[in-house]
Image (spheres, rainbow, N blue to C red):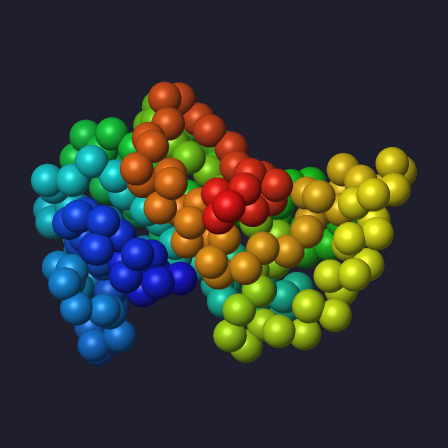
Length: 203
């Protein structure tokens, strides 16, 4: 998602710095500035954040499932903590964070860790936009398209409407549009974008 966001921001005139682990520099689209560091350790990149006005935090465990409880704590919480620290120390005006839909009936520890990250962001005093997708459709993640008709029905039944909308799927195009809109329209305080708002950004 980071590479797609960079590719969307650069043609719109944004200067982009991207934090990457050593050895993955070549995966980024051309045009941005590469910062090599450890996203779990703010000391490896905090001095290279400024000057900038927005920090977008996208680091997290890929393909989350219940067997990755320890990784959620180490990676999702650890990277958010490091990013918040770097943002605070550099006077960042706007923090953008991709969280997860809440509440949710499954993946409870994953949701709990992301909720703790959200609370940490609020407590930091940073102006922030928090996006809450549930499942992002895209390469390698096509099977949930089979569920789209069921969600369509559930969103139209009063008893299941709210849950279906909150836990509905979004696609990469919608996520990139929502992230781009967040970057270009900074929040004042904390702004939450749920699935319906994320979908709306692509229209």
